[in-house]
Image (cartoon, rainbow, N blue to C red):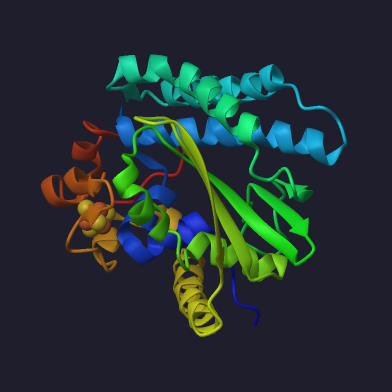
Length: 288
Ligand code: SF4
């Protein structure tokens, strides 16, 4: 039987905590939209803007920066509208209001220095086949072959932390997943930093020949478990069944306390109590 393949973000969540993955699959979200999620909106908006930029280049057209920015602004409005429809609330209105200008700044910075200017654009935001809907920002080509590129945005990153930030993407799961499906060992991160000093950093990497096969084994191991959970209907898992999943006992991710800390630790996965701090965005209901 063919093994299932899950998206890079879903696999990352499952690897961090199967219970968090299950809660997200059931549509649970924090009622409150905090700084990290707003930063994610900004990252998506910049990617949407640069999608227009790269498609124009691919078609041999002169990209229009304002049209690119409009696409990013639309992406933020869509995220906002969806969040409001779901009954969610933004906790930092001032930061939210500043996102639009940040998109403009990021796009202006990137397009002024376009680090991919010397490459041919091969694919832009294209969903890769049989990949769990994996969708790299852009695939480019030069004389050495194909390279997968993803954009990242940091609102603030002091120069002394640049190296540490870029080291996060060494043998980074999402990029290895893309490379595996694209059939290349080359990938790059374009890091757009908005402050305190504005900069665009292009950082190439290559998939380690030693680690690549181990990574694939690890990923397939996770996918087999995820597939087994899906087969028994994780969307309708009861609180008792959710509790039976192997939770991450540290409850800490790269931003600090896991967003489901209250759900697990304070509310014991009791759906009625969770309603105070969380919304459920899917129709299925957790059984008794
Ligand atoms: S609080 Fe802990 S157990 Fe619950 S979803 Fe987050 S990491 Fe997993």
